[in-house]
Length: 360
Image (cartoon, rainbow, N blue to C red; front, side):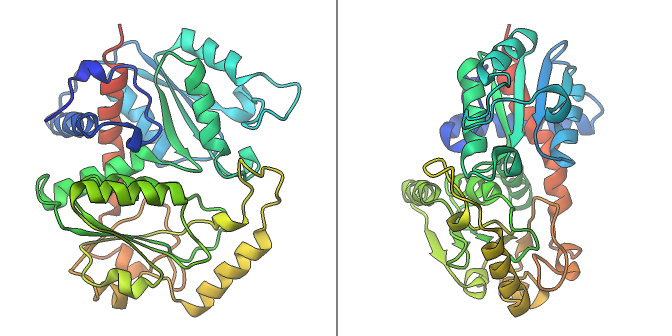
């Protein structure tokens, strides 16, 4: 069953958890159809003369280009807004004087275009966990046009959707039931990698009949609210959701593995305590510990513990023994990272067609 497309027009995409299953199924169905049409050399110009503003506070390769190309293919225009040259807001915590309010900027862009997409996390919001997501929601509050989360400190919904689309292609759209999906922490050199990809994937995959395992060292937990959502999703589907603190245990019998680094939420300021200083030294010492021990790296030996699993990553991956993944895995026959990257384009066209295409 899918949702009537007219019910999705104008809808924000900030997290998949806020969408109905029918709405997500509709986006996936549209994405599949548009991918087939593009392969045949035809693309309907359903976003003719429509503009998507893309506001970037962080650098981007796949996100920027996939949204720009997607809008072009659908007949519309994606307008890149570099925050350093086009807009510097009062920050998400409303603490900086002398800058333009989110409210004013949102209402102006609302008059000019048909959609607003925002990417913001980390240093632009003073490393405060949740502040990027709050900023996006502040824009959505004052916009009548749909607001899309292109990656914040809490969610990366379009990445999770493209990951799901890719798995549906590999296993078949009706063959995901009971597949073991592992979202694992992995050692990385940066202390500031967001938690967004892990959060969005465990929330989404638990809604699509997979048995989901999340693995991380105890020093690198995920948001308890996200874990609660994932557990409830799995229970509603009659599937399992488990948390383990051992990478080898997680990989046993896995059908899909997704090892990716993320920061330690324990050592970040939060919206409840925004004045707390981010403890980079502590996080780096923990990362060094796991790099030296090489206890959280996806390598060929670990892949042998799986059920011939697919290897996934949102990219860019830190490729080196002791970090996220070794070359033999990411460049190996079970790696589907480039398929995921391609499907960012198609699934985002599905979202854009659904939420922008129905506006008159």
